[in-house]
Length: 191
Image 1 (cartoon, one colour):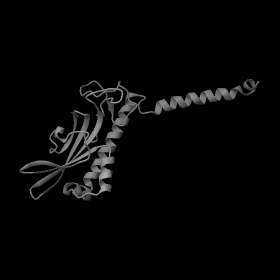
Image 2 (tube, helix red, strand yellow):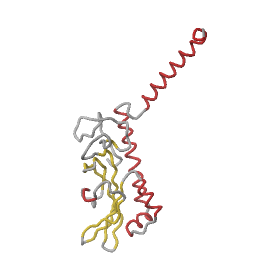
Image 3 (cartoon, one colour):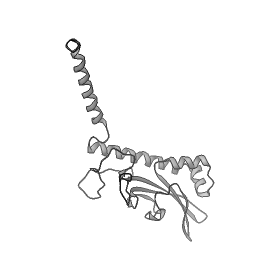
Image 4 (cartoon, rainbow, N blue to C red):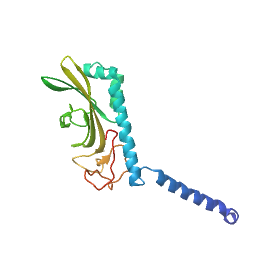
């Protein structure tokens, strides 16, 4: 009797559920290849902008090179979703003054003292490496290097260590990085 009198409520509820399902799938970043492209580009651009802000923060950068930072500054750098390396160089060679992560080996970085941005495949996966020349004083040239993880890879894969895009847990194995066409190109701000 109730369903006969108020059956329209059940039909409306079913329609609302259907619309909610369709909208949530339409608006999610992994619903289409173009949505994935936009989501990856947005994530990369935000991290690039954050690194550029760090480069312009001369007080923090100066403390990194002089190794005179406090716990608050260290925690702030460790929380960033990219890795920071500070290199000092002179005629005698180059040396690492600061690093914010042990997830990748600084020796792996291809020519960190070359200003610019490049996309590289390291042992830990695919990364964008941004290198900025900071200063040239008293025979020393200093570089701040940001390493933005794009896709993390593990030498041993299992249920717990799964190759995945950085901060994109819902992207399945149907999405990969291929450096050759065809495919959808994901651009950084520096290209």
